[in-house]
Length: 184
Ligand code: HEC
Image (tube, rainbow, N blue to C red; front, side):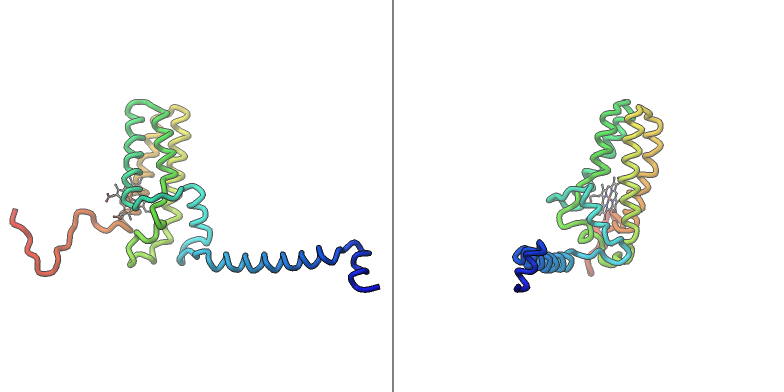
């Protein structure tokens, strides 16, 4: 009896068996290819940080500035909702704020090159904004506008901390070499 006949007798169809080995091999090649192609997050960030971000923040064609302008508009809408006791407005605006879009090309290209060693703070920023928005939504659903208002301060601290680190100094313009400032 040949080896193949023996395998067939044992219930191992030689074709199926060989196909299985090939499939395993092909799977391994694809898996290796994918893990090489997958961009690794910079040092200081958990390896799955960007995968988690992608789960709650959809990609967009916007710049980071445009995303920020939308976040500011949503924050203002939360505040309007508090002032006018509109819990639907608060919950919906907080939902948009917490799940804001990702800018085109992801977050990192918009952050200054000399601040790359500070990227370790990003998961904390994400949980302050995302977690803060969730608390606001929960309080709004209860109709507890005082609790919503209390959550605004820690959330704003998230905006301020991130800007202090990554935004530079808004309004301060360094003049090009040789330029003379205009007289008021
Ligand atoms: C992950 C860090 C981070 C967090 C958190 C963050 N920002 Fe920003 N924000 C930035 C950076 C970086 C810029 C500068 C972007 C640029 O100039 O390209 C910016 C700029 C802005 C701008 C100016 C946009 C313009 O037109 O120049 C506004 C408004 C803004 N953020 C609002 C907010 C608000 C409101 C929050 C909180 C709800 C917030 N940001 C949270 C990083 C952050």
